[in-house]
Length: 61
Image (cartoon, rainbow, N blue to C red; front, top):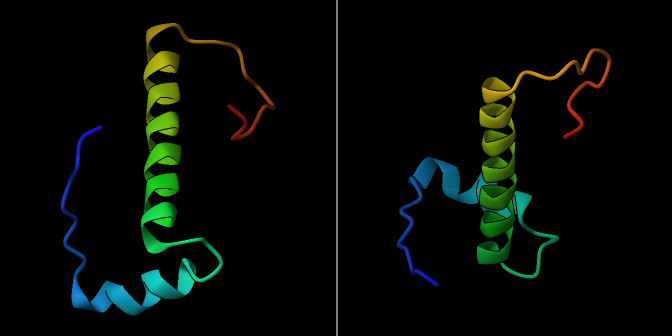
């Protein structure tokens, strides 16, 4: 595991903490958001490599 330091701009601090209020911790919320984005990015890259006919599938990966 690699540790990182994340600097959150003051303007984003309260909205981010409010959004994470239901999560076990702010770190957990951020980690889940990063994992989700990584999954979406990987899906987009895969789709660009081998285009699939996903007509009507919407945002379901």
